[in-house]
Image (tube, rainbow, N blue to C red; front, side, top):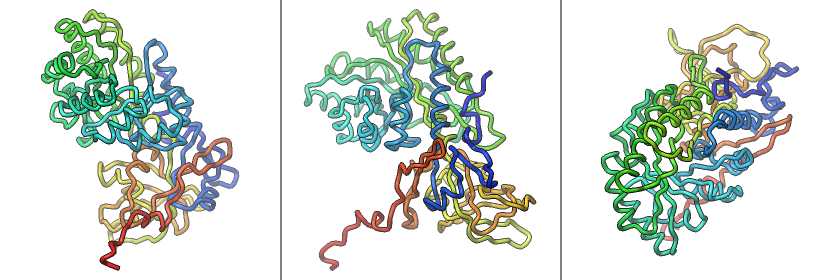
Length: 442
């Protein structure tokens, strides 16, 4: 089976330059830190476009397929433009993500608004900007959206998000398809929702069903099971109500390689499972093949990203660990603290001494749990060295915070030996720009 970019630990352009320093996109990583400072997020454009190409080729044998990038993994104007150029639509979950793709010039008909508690303001923005699909998550939202659509004298195109009752073997916080989940209609609630749409909600047009079974998925059979459940439901609704639903959205969730022990399936493997399962199920249940929507996020952007840090202090615990501190940590990458996520890293600058030490990479924030990587072997880390942490394109900047009142980091895009800022580093003035001192305190 052909390897795809999501199975790689490092960006496809990574190499050691003539100076001995690591390079990505033809840019010396040490020189990048000298120019832009650290912590620094770096996105390799060639890797990002390579993943997109993998997906398009892998799913090309299914005629009616729509790729929707899951914006929650990383939402920026520049990356949205690249993904738009690659033919992707967007799965968005907030007003901020809607506005970002809108300002990036995305065709809003290729945008789907998802989420379990969309606000009136967010739904209003979605209608005003012409978002193509809204995935309705619950009965409250059905009623709210119908009333809003009526006030705008519009018919809104929707999907119903359902929980298919599938548990994938991933962290419990990122499982979304099992029965005890905050997301979506239970399968036993679908008929009630459909009857409301048919009989009461005349400003809503139902096109299909939407499910998402989780994130960082390494299994392929779960996609087969999910598709059969959705197609069986579509056939049942057709038989019972005469509904001709013609879309299924199976979410995303394909895993990536964070460490050498990780072995995610390729986009080609999951494409074969998904397309074969879809063809089998429509034949089994006697319905027309629906349009397929898939929402990869992590597997699109993660491998393209690295984060660069400057190493500072160190501490050798007597008869214990050696801690190496960096100038970032849980505020720019909360995943190790939240999910016990593991990462791989290298020293980016040339090191004459190759003797390895086992060290633990500690963040700078005032939490004992601010540990980025436990027990990693590196060539004698020293103050001023540049640490390159791999596979940080997804859910790092998008989950970043200002904890300890630290500014959010800068992000650059590299390609063909050029680097461009795509997110500026926050300033101290940015940090206090929304603070207000009441007059009575002055």
